[in-house]
Length: 346
Image (cartoon, rainbow, N blue to C red; front, side):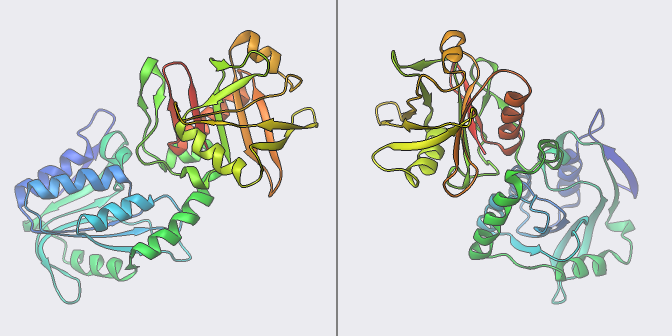
């Protein structure tokens, strides 16, 4: 392929296909990537391409300052045998450079160039599949002389990623993304796109941006519940783990006081049923909207931590507030479903 400026996505060839073609036709044995953001999907897909084309060495340097690169993407890259560096400087590391070569020299410069790509694509599902990306592609016969020096300089900006360092970064990543605006989470692709599940609902993603143990809110749909006397919303296993973590550390004997939306603090109980892996939260009858939920079988039960000992319970009726809760979980990759209802955490 001669030197070209190409675009991908939204009707054009997707970027993963372009990258795959470059690797299969120029046959590098080493690949270097300097990208702003990396996702689990991006690392997994590229690893498959490299394995099928016998590329034995891969180096990636990526930004962690903005807390968009997924910690599990870094872990997967290390587990795949890649050499991984991260940049956490005063300014965002926003480069996107892909270099195929035979090997890297002592100064980290690429030896025997095969191809280079520089442009807008990150190592992510959105960039690989749907974004309208634009990039400059050159093969070994038309490499700019500055390619090697630029790659080496970008590589030097990073520090080596380690399991301990990734664990520290993960805490920051989760804290930063918990309350990011929903649209920012979607645009940045912090979590992978949700997939359709049972009944057209969204099923849990494999790589959420927030672990159950780090969450401060859990919710479940009220399309089905138990309890003849008290309303008993059931929280499926993943949301139940969040709820158990929130409540067990702040309660004794399966009883906890929670502030309700009418400003009254009430006592709730939350037995766990091993048979189906669910919590049943016993909701007092005078909680606002409890009788409405029983009659209409709609809305969600939401438990949130607002402070050290400030736990709040709300029955959220269908509308804007409910949609925001669902959208946040979807954007964080923590949205799940059973055959009848949605659930999630954040």
